[in-house]
Each structure stands twice: as C-alpha cells, then as structure tokens.
Image 1 (cartoon, one colour):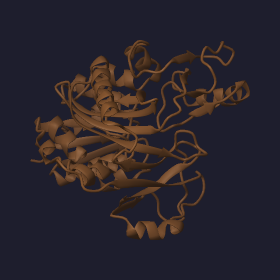
Image 2 (cartoon, rainbow, N blue to C red):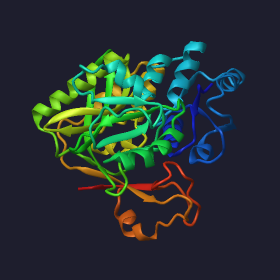
Image 3 (cartoon, rainbow, N blue to C red):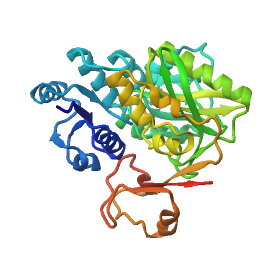
Image 4 (cartoon, rainbow, N blue to C red):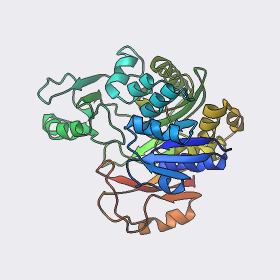
Length: 371
C-alpha cells in the first residue's frame, strides 16, 4: 500500500512538492481554504480545509491514515505541520516553537540577539506614535506575514506614517518591525543541514523590481557578489543562526544582503523557498532539493546529496513574470523568452484574473534559462 502524504496549501510551490511526491510513488493529499491553486488539481485527493484550523486538519489525517504532513514555501504552514507532527508523533525536522520563531520577525531577531554577527538593528512597534529609534532610511514590514506583503523602504516620517497602517494590516499580531536598511546586493541562500552541519549551500543573486521594494524579479546562479572569504562567512552565519534557532536537520532558506562584504540576514526559515529555487538548483548542481527533503524526512535518506557536481560549467537564471493584481494575465509579451527557456510554468491561463497576493506586483509565472 502506498504511503499517504498531506501537503498544506495548493499554490504553485506546493504543486511542485505534490508532483515530486507522486514521482516517488506516494499517494498525495492536499488541503487549503479554497480550490484556488494548481496543487489542488494535481493531488490525488483535495479537501477544502483552512490549514489554520488545526483540529480539522488532524481529523482529516486520522480519517485517511496519512503518515506525513508537510508544506513548501509557506511560513504560515510550517508551524502548523510541526505542531500536528509533534502531536501525532509524525516525522518532522523542526519543533513548532522553532517554526513559529522563524515565522515572526520580532522573535527571530530577538532569538538571534543584538550581538549576533549577521543580525541587523531592529525595533518592534505597535503604534505609529512610538518614538523611532532607527535612522532613516529603514525597512518597515509586518512582524509576521509572508510574501513581501506590506514591506516598504521608508526614507522619512511622511513615508512612515503613510505606510505604517498598511504594514500593520498584514500583521497577524498587530506588530510592525523596523529594520536597519542594508544598501548592498541581495542574496537568496538555499542550504541543507544534516545533524547541525551545513552540507549543501548555494547563494544566488536576488534581483528585485526597482519600483517595488523587496519584490523579486530574478534569481541568478552562480552569484557574482561573493568573494571566497565572504562565502565562508556567510556559511558560518547560516550554520550558527540555524543552531540558535533550533534547526538541526532539513532545508534552510535565507534572504540576505551584503554591505561592505558583510552578510546580513533579512529572513531565515526552516523550509524550502517559495520561488521554485529547487528547480534552478537542480539544473545547476544536479541535486533535487525537493526529492532530498522528502527522502530525508520520510526515510532518513540523504543520498541525493551525492549527485552534487564538483564542477559547474554554466549559470542559470530563474525569471518571474509579474503583473498587477486584479488584471487579466497576459503572457504574450514573454512568448519569445518562454519558447527559448529550458523550463517554464504559468500560474494562470491567458486572460485569467490575477488574485492579489502581495497586492502590488504579483507573480504569474516563471521561466529558467542558461547564461
């Protein structure tokens, strides 16, 4: 009998996980608040359940004799999957406590501590009337949201007042965090940890849309922004931060920035990223991080890591197609790029209405090409 795996969420990144699990021979289940993502169509079974309704998810797991619950690319889902896994004695990489710390920027910053190399100066505020301790410019963001919702670069008090309540609206706790602005290039760091040691780490250059603070346009591997010395420092920061946060096994994704060759953590979380980076890194390194994650979690098998190439001959770019929400998806301007890509995927059908996610400039598809 096939083992049954439940994925929380049905967005395109969860679809990736479901497809991979089916390739590995598992029976796939998925649940989400609504049938509004491609994961619902590819799963063997789909059920409309709000993933934050933990008891309903538990009931579904028990009723269907499901042996594993997990998610990909969702800070919201990982604490839920860890909580349920602890409760039902199912395999999991991190505790619910660790998952919730990483899902809350305030707790993450505080847990790392002000003296942690790689942490940035920060301030947590509940009201726009509180005195600001940081110097302008700084980054304003909800303390506990995902998908770059409500994130703004703040240059003066007028911008602060205009953006504060927008960020607060996306914060489940009602708290807003202000973070020191790091002016250098951005990096996405995909790593994998086994028994507290980083054994796979690939930094990529994270290029954002100039008019939308923090919203990603492209991921580029290999990075051109790291020296050998800085790369070693970055690895040490990831490994040390993971231990402080309680991450000893499984994938770790970090968004980082460089300033004067010093890496700083913007976000760090015990999961695979939400940008399909496993796909581009599979082309680049030969290692399938999705496959590795599930084989490690289910069977304690990390043999996928042995496929990592010692010599990389070319680079790759993952580029997102983005469009304003509540408009009709239009892929026609990208037809040439899509046809010349080595991989492409559209989140919507041509002309389909784009649902708001970050509310500014939402991803509607992506393609991968060699450089």
